[in-house]
Length: 128
Image (tube, rainbow, N blue to C red):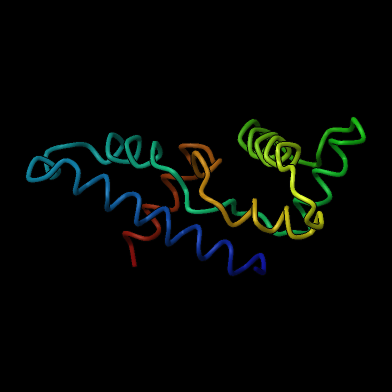
């Protein structure tokens, strides 16, 4: 998936998580601050990793060689560590390309972005 498509998909998935969080509060949702709803939405699993194959491949390659990936921030580091763990745990005789592509397209524990960035995406979507 191309970078622009990934960003759009991530925005869509984040807003779906936000709507799911609103629905989880039922009729009380209108009385709950958006920040609380956003915190709940951030606890939901993401449908995939939002990084291109090429960027993930470079990061994993660097990490296998003992170098830090070119990531900034704790969230990206956590994401690359999770991808590397899954990559090392895969014990199939499949090509590295296929393994990494499969990993990137599987559900993950979260969106790997800060609350500030998550909130910004929600507020931008609400303005539309």
